[in-house]
Image 1 (tube, rainbow, N blue to C red):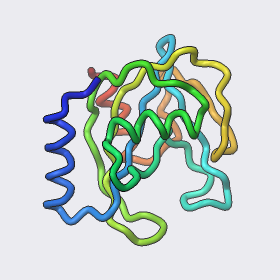
Image 2 (spheres, one colour):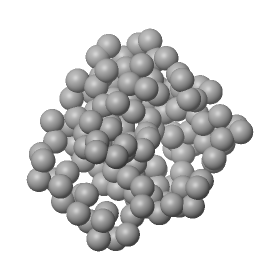
Image 3 (cartoon, rainbow, N blue to C red):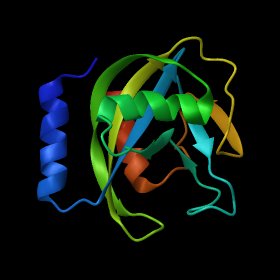
Image 4 (spheres, helix red, strand yellow):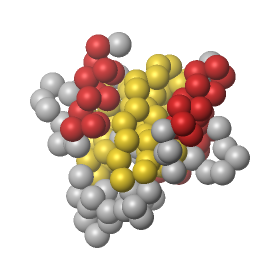
Length: 146
């Protein structure tokens, strides 16, 4: 999966930078398309499209959180964590300095997607500019370049 040394480095840097909340994001790829989820309209940043993502629980490693979050939000099983696509910082709905670590993952099988926290999903080929935040756009650019 992902090298332990990379995960340790990411954790050290986040600690050094005063990050209060660690988050993971997954670029779920299947048949040349990427999975995007739409946040509920009444939620923090409601209505936006995003990657499957979520908080790293206390005592949990980044890769464990990634596998768990993809499963919780989509019902899909991660079979491979392929590439680290960088991170971005933001302020959470509760005001915490958060850092989202993003990785390319492969799942099997890719259907059915079972949503538990989102209103909709789409598999996009990224031929058009996706309706996501600028930070997620940059992650998707890195994905396309890798």
